[in-house]
Each structure stands twice: as C-alpha cells, then as structure tokens.
Length: 605
Image (tube, rainbow, N blue to C red; front, side, top):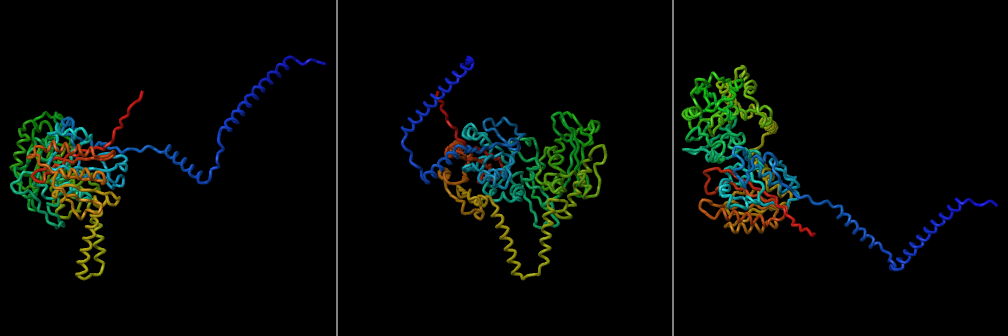
C-alpha cells in the first residue's frame, strides 16, 4: 500500500485546526448571547397606541435634527444709502459736498417693509433689509425741535446715539410734520408737490413768497409749469444754506435780496450759460445770455474765470482762448448785473437750468425747466436734448455749427418752447401725461354717449365719485396696509403731534395715546413695546430754552433701546421741524439699528 504524501498530511492538519478555532469562537458567542437574554426581563408586546406614540416621538426627534437654524434679519446700506450716510462718531470724516440726502419717501418705504416684510408694494432702494418677516417689531421715535446740526453739535453728549446706531443718513426735511407726511406719502402726487408755504420758508422775502395758481389748466398758466420745491431738490437746483446746512451753496448769492409773490403776470426770462473746465476741476462760467418773452436779448456777455482754464470745451461752449484775452468781466459782476436786471417776481426758464444756476453760483426760487415740462420717452428720468425738442416741436434747427453752442440761440429756443406749452395744455409735449389724458378723454366720451340725467342724479353721481376717490386714498394708506396684514400700531405723543394724523386714515388696528408730558410719553412707549407691532412716539423739545434737552434725549434713546427685544428695528428720526417755529427748513437725520443680542460664551478648558 502506497504511503500518503507528507504535503497533503500537513495541509489536512492545519485545516482542522482552523475549523476547530472557529467552532470555539462561535460557541463562546452563543453562550454570551444566551447569558444576556437570561438577564433581560421578558419584553411586553407593544400595543397599537404605544407604537403610534413611539412613531410620533421619533418623528419629532427627526424634525428637531433636520430643522434649519432661524436666519436673523439684517439691515445694510446700498450705494445710495452710503451717499447719504453720516458717521456720528466722526461727523467731519465725510465732506458735506459728497452727501446726497434721502427723502421722507425713503423712510416710508423702510418703515412699511420692516412691519409687513416682503408684502410691501414699495421697493427699498437705499438699503437692504434681509428676512424682514423675522423682525419682531418696529419702534420709531420722532424727535421734533432738534435738527441734524443740533445733534452733530452736541454729539459728545449724545453718546447713546453715536454708540447704538451703526447707520445714520441725512434726510431732506419739508416744512411739514412727519404725521402729515405719513398720511399722504402713498399718493404719488404728494411725493413731488408741496404746499405753497414751503416756498416762503426757503427764501428771503418782503412779502410772503407764494404761488397764486388758478385751477384752470387748459391752457395752463406760468404757475402750473413752475417746479415744486421737492422737484428742485431732486433735480439738484441750488438751495439756501439754511436748507442744507454748510455745503456746496455756501458761496452762492440770491438772485434778489427779497422776493415778491409770483403770479401768472410775472415776467419770464430765458437764460443759458456756457462753461469751461478750470484747474479746480470745476465747470465755470465763460458766457451768458438772457432773453425776455419778446425774444429780445436783454443781457449777453463773456466772463473770465479767476481760476486757470484747463479746457475751453470749444466744441460745446464755442469759447476760445482768444475770445477771453481782453475780457475783464468776472462772475461777481454778472451776479450784480442779474440782481439789478431781474424783477422780484421773475421766472427763469431754460433747459436743465440747474446747471446754469450752479455755474452762476446763484439761487432763484421760481424756475421753469424745459427738460422737465417736455418729455418724449414717457420716462421722467430720461430727458431729451434742447436740439431735439426744438426739432420736434418748433420744426427748427439749432446747434448745427462746429463752433459750439450759442447761448442767445439756446435761450430763444427755450423761451419759444415755454410759450408754445402755454398756448396748448399741460399734456402737450409730455408723454408721461398724455396717457392720463387719453384715459380721461375716453372716460369723458363714454359718459357723453349716455342719456342725460336729472340734476339730482348728477349731484349724487358727483358725490359718489368723490367718496370713491377719498375711500380709495384711505384704503391705500399706510395704516390700511398695516391692517391688511393684521399688524397693530400705537401712536404716542402730545395733542399737537397726534393732531397731525388724519383720523380718516386710521382704523381699529391703530391706537392713539395722548400724553401731556415727555415723561408720560416715554412711560407709555416702554409699555407698548411689549404688545404692538409698530410704535411711533413723538417727543417735542425746545433746545434753545431747555438746557437739559440734550441729556434727556440721550437718556430717552438709551431706555427705549434697552427695552427693545431681540430682532427689533429701532429708528430715531430727528425731524428738523419745530412746531413752535416754522420760519426755516432744517436738515433731518434718520438713525437705524436692528437689535441683536450678543451671546456671552464661556470656554471651559
């Protein structure tokens, strides 16, 4: 019998050893499991209710694990907001020339968006408010009797303002209370048209400077073509230093020492200037022409700037070095001549007249701008050149030569355009108003086709129409929008301040709390922070007679801030309006902060 090879025997022995080891391990694991099972009590069979509860518990745990952290709201300024920003900790860090103020319309937009979030119909262009729906509430403190300059002058004592508010922007102040503005800012016309009293507060006067416009607009009077104060601000017309504080109009002069009321009989003068570029990088006057309503040239002269001329801009101005060699007339001479030439109620006309007045370093209250009263595009911000306006409406041609513009020619062209407008109607040459005109005409035509009704029915229809318009304005108002989203508001202040709110614009979501002292107003405000979505509190000061006004204001701001919860939008508006003295318009200031609690984290090492 043959013997088995050694190699095979060795392999079989090793294989058996491995299997034996695996067997012992499995037996040990089974014994371990059996011991553990013996120790455990017999599990009860779970019923249906127990399984449902367990399912809900697990589902809730899963929800907690997968829940996204809540995104806190944030507030930052955009480029437009930065242009209007003032650094309260260092107010002189930004030159006044570079500040471009915002308007009360901008406050309206922020206020509404902070309360109703993205449901606000108005865009917020000067700031970014992220996640406004997560804002808990909004508190607005309106300070009357202080101006921006009062705050900056006393900023060292107002440390709560400089430390608590990361954002402060300048606001153009009208001579109207904030409450009145809030009632009407939703109406488009009220963004651009202000009362006649606004004129009287801006310019020196022997009689009250005012407009006496008739209600008949077909054909229009000169007064219907005048720019309103708000339009003048938006178009960068020069304003008195009392309106904008120290700034780029500091060295400007008034066109008259005093003004008379403007009327439809006031004389019109068309003006045009040509400029050159000086070493100071400024456009300075080199030539001016003025014509009257009869298209007669009443003033025309060359002007030599004091600063060295770097570019004559001959292609546009028509001015050459040789033309100014023997000229001795300077800007101050032109200013004196115009002050003597212009009557106290003169109306100046021109194409983009704001540029000419800045070149003249002069301020004038009554202006008609052909670039505004004529519009071919249907878009207000898109203006048409004088050359094209003349070609379209006068069927004439100007500015054809290569030797630059002629101010006499341009002045005559501007006057012709104004006279043409006065011969027609407000809609003439204005695409923005033509659409409204067409709508009104079609409405009138449809009514004219209807059979005549009795006098009583006509009166009733007119009354009904008036009520409908009034109702529409109320329903579109600020407080109506709050009520639409079930937001409640509380107005707190003295009788004078709250008296500016139109009761017809309020609703059952708005509470008015009249208090007769600043102490009680503050106490009521602190209490309402707990329950209202929006709190608007008015405090009135007389900084000239009350020495403690500054320290009290600082304390009030601190107390209100401390009472605000996390995610509260807190704003302070320095209105620039003094209810005891409406003789001047002062710049306003809006300070904002979105309160966030800082977590104090202790590290355990």
